[in-house]
Amino acid sequence: MTMSPSLTNEAADKLAVVDALYRFTAGIDLRDESLLSSSLAESAVSDFRPAATKAGFEYPVIEGRDVIVAALTMSLATLDTTHSVANPRVTIDGDNARMDALVEAQHVPRDDPTRHYLMKNRYDVELARSGDIWVITRNTVDNVWRSGDPAVLSVV
Image (cartoon, rainbow, N blue to C red; front, side, top):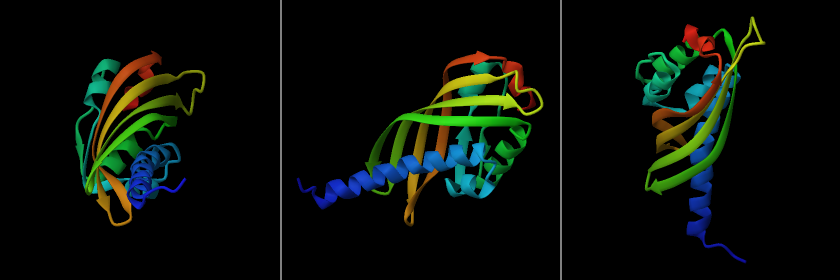
């Protein structure tokens, strides 16, 4: 079966869109500021307020790639994290895209690995094409469920 070039390009774009979220989450987990930065547009906006509210704390909207990278690096500095991305659904409109995905985020204090806080979050992600890659322009995170000790995030 031969695929049309437009289907091949659409599939490649959808994979590249999902890759932006993979770079975002892997950048956090690996503490790789360069990888995290590569996932974000210069004027990106990250809004964790819906998920934070359900976890019982406040977290401001963060604006600007460098500010987002610094804020996440600092707020998660004492934690080991693992993020798993599932069920990404992508729509593309020219050089803009939207993705809805589920992201499971485990947070474990490095100094006390007996404690944890596990969250299943819904990511609503807006993206733009930037050369050969896609970057996140806005990310809104809401919580579906959570378990464990929310005090693990008290440093956030």
